[in-house]
Length: 513
Image 1 (cartoon, rainbow, N blue to C red):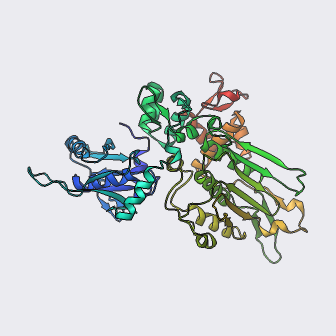
Image 2: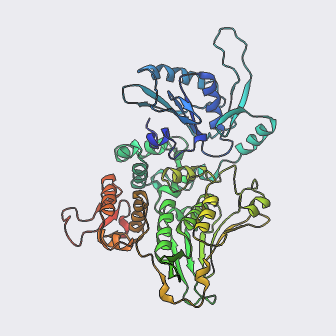
Image 3: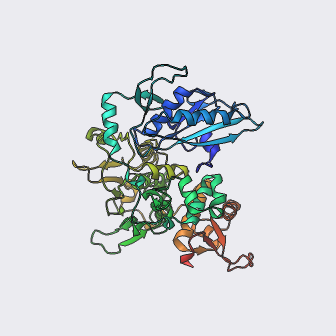
């Protein structure tokens, strides 16, 4: 079976946190079965994990070059592994993938998503001698990058959690399998570099959806999980009212001149479109000369990195059972990003005051996995520190994080840079950046995808101008070529590639045409 992730990224911890990956030099059944059980229990709701057999580990990272297993040995290990998994109660079998290294040696990769029937137990000891006394079964959980036997209170907590499957991982009985759109599935898989992307349109939809753990239920009545509808349906607000981002710009308290922009669609498209809009129309740079200095003072009203992290946090940690949008409200004094509900109770009021927001559990573990694979979020509790650093680097005031006693909301307030509060500076001094910010190809890929999602179709030159370039650059042209090669975008007139009227469109976005 092909995994819905990029295997090279997985092996080198480029997307998945190291605590969710365990490396094993060879086949040692007992610790592997304990770790499978722990990942299946998913005590912290982080989405399970992976075991890579055939890779030596040092300080939590693989030793390069990867050692691998002897050619052909993975088949024997798989057979033994499947037999050992019968000892897990309730029955649990991981997804198994053999990966061939250069030279013919093999890695055995086990994907263990959070289980549906936790808590899971397995024997403390695996006996192989006939007539041996059976070992008692125990519950195992992960703490950081290690596997432990759960104590009494942890077992009780796990039993309580078993009655609360995360909402994004629940089946939606109001939706059909056909509500998952193959074009969006393929676009995602190609963007993350999964080999599954090439076969989406050659296989039944149910096969791809089950490989990605996007459906639950028997084959005669499969139902998509909520995360699948939020990520791979063009209109998720059909199933989840007000699943959208609203950006409200209020230049005057009376509402005069107020503008409101609403962003709908799959969550990653919402984020990309909203961030592109904010970067293009809300963010400004202040430039002024200082006496006795050749250098100019430059500052943004709000640094893009802080806005990006705050909005990503809101989308990742909001509840999709509450019919309220994520709202971004911009006034001359501040930017406020509001999402519902508030943070987990494991984050105390003192943590909020100290701006130390480390949550032990994810509210949306599946959505987090998808956004992490796309490189949109990191999910390592790094969002708040990044916001603080970005504001400090820009010379802005400290961000404020607030909630109420009942944790019904979470509000991030970013104060405007003090230079933009001065009444005596000329309006002409507030300018767009003199040149576009330095962007990686991944940044450009995200921005171009968001533009095509919002506007339906654009020429390459139009894209370059909106992104702030004076002309079509080689890098923008290269990224457009990558989107075309990946099937994410296509030319509307393939027979007239050199036509000045040629337009690019996003695959699966035909309703805009």
